[in-house]
Image 1 (cartoon, rainbow, N blue to C red):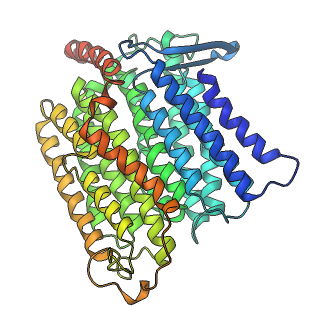
Image 2 (image 1 turned 120 degrees about the vertical axis):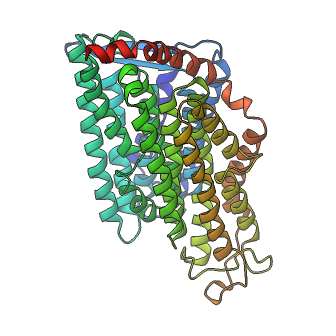
Image 3 (image 1 turned 30 degrees about the vertical axis):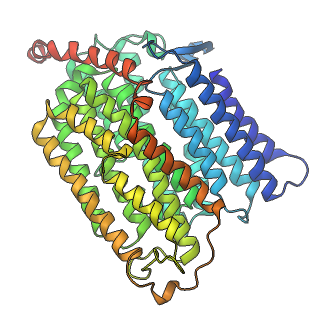
Length: 499
């Protein structure tokens, strides 16, 4: 059942890319959307069949692959990966649906999106370190091409910068994975057979350092963040939706799965520094967002700040904070996707994202009133207004982290206030006031342009009112993971003395 989630997008990409007859852009889009919908429905079916009370991997698939290297085709799903898989399926459908019907080389474009979906899905399902790395690298080339070919004026620079940063990320992660296996004496890269408890604290710290920097680039955390604003600004709207909504979550997922879970002793030792790092990312990302005049770049910097909350919660490593980290990943995926979609509609209709140019878009007669209303909901969710999913995820993060890191948590809460500041600036300058002369006579916005944003807005409200529908899948897995972390924390002082 899990292999189907990887094979379906691969089959769809091959079908679209290598169909012998000429395939129009509309037909390519329909085929890609059909494949994406099937993937989403298949993921929902897995969620229905998923045993919430089971903390171990479910629907496990194991096939020996390259035994001489210790590489196995080992897939599994648990409460940590399941909501991310559903999010990936949903946003892939939205990205394909939102793509411009008149874009150039549509067959290549939709094939790359499906290939990207397969790589992300495989990374979330992989239960083998080397297999995860292969899928982690698989998504690199499609995203590079999607930015480099269909991006903006500086697409070559942004795509190359993304490629270099992510390549360095992969090298560090692979080095840490190889070190875990070889230094622990394991004969396989399978997660189930890996025992890092025999490693000294110094060795664990070195390995964890590679993982932190590697996944820190992907998240991204300050100071490894500089590729993200450029990539977002130059990428098309659907690609920005996937980049912010799903691909950044590979970094936070990797920290939880391979950092906190595999190297708990070193993680506990570095936890205070990680919490401080989170504070720096939150404040820096939020401060940079305030200074932006490009709407898309403002939303991009907001992602840096909000991903800092995930690191803070993971550093605290309490059951509640870690649950909040997963909630923050899902809520940020929904909210950032909504904001990028709406900014894309504004740019498509108004021809600009510059806050010095556009104004008064909430005008009910000649502006974009529905888009403006959805944008108000999106920025309220991002700022943590009660009743929306952003509030509950941030509240759980802060509530769970405060007991361990009260100072860092209180400082991070300032980030929510800064979020309100920069998004109030965006709303005031772009949507309120008199409609500026540069954006008069705007083209009509059809409901086909609004449907993806409306779907995301509905989910943001539903999960904000009833978050239990989301956390029930994750809570048992997270509790079991953190219990291991707590056992290690109790025995950390003797380990420090030996080191």
